[in-house]
Amino acid sequence: MYDDFFWSTGMRAIRVGSNDANAGVFGPSYQAVLDSKNELYTIIDSAASEIYISSLYFESFMDEFFAVHGVDSADYEVANKTVTSKCNGADDFKSVFFLMGG
Image (cartoon, rainbow, N blue to C red; front, side):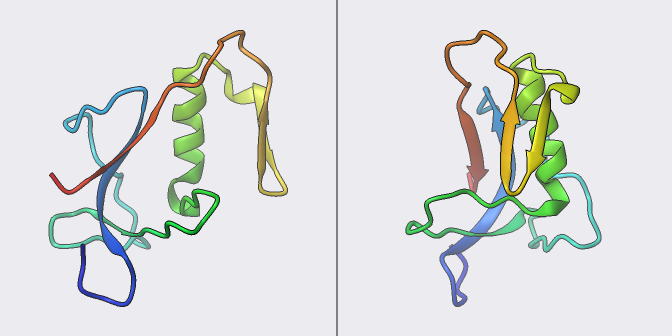
């Protein structure tokens, strides 16, 4: 954890369906705040009932999430802070992994 005003740390990646730490990292963005290890500055709030993803990464995350589940990008929509999609017949969504630290 960082020594600042929040519960914060660096995040190496978000993965859908795999916790493989070597599967890549966040793409570069001049607006992103990265630490000395090239990890994305992340605030953790255990009281939040939702997960907030920066708009810098939201679209690519949703594309990856639905691709893993076999849902075409034309078959999901983001509107009014809600994501909806056609059912792909799967019983469950795969796990989402947040890779932080070691």
